[in-house]
Image 1: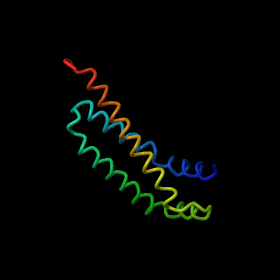
Image 2: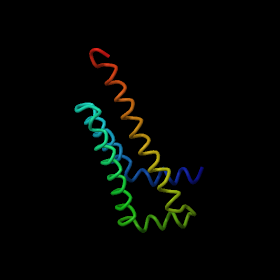
Image 3: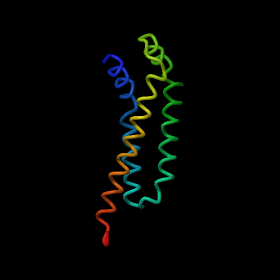
Image 4: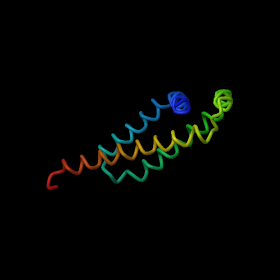
Length: 106
């Protein structure tokens, strides 16, 4: 339970921006259709990479805090990146299925 709480505390530092990017991508899919999905998936992967680089570079002292509590970088980053990307995919899939249902002639 302590580990989950620490992971969530770590994720809070960039969760808002990550959700904002996810919802911006969802609005692009809604406006332009599913054809933009490939570009948006690569955009999301690139932004996750930028988050990783930024936090590891500029919050180095905070990373020592988690390491001293017995949490490795892999333990911090893996669940966050998986959750964030799955949230992105599920949001896009739900949106795409709703767009398909509302199209005339479907």
